[in-house]
Length: 59
Image (cartoon, rainbow, N blue to C red; front, top):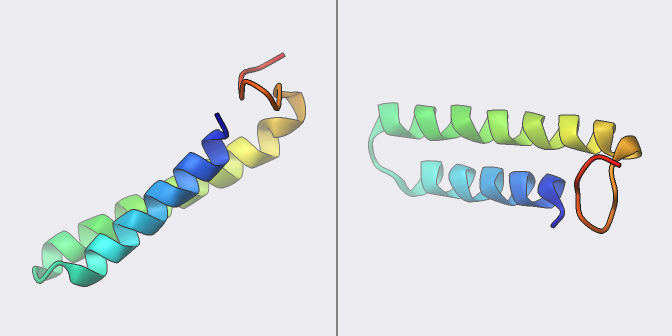
């Protein structure tokens, strides 16, 4: 499983939910969590040099 793709897809879904939700506070929380998901995806991608591309686990 590609954890970078999962993280970025989750972030995208959260951004979409933040746009649809009517509450301002909830929207901000969803956007914040989405940013964290995108950053986690970037960190995973940068560390992927030592990852097994088939399993997504460290070699």
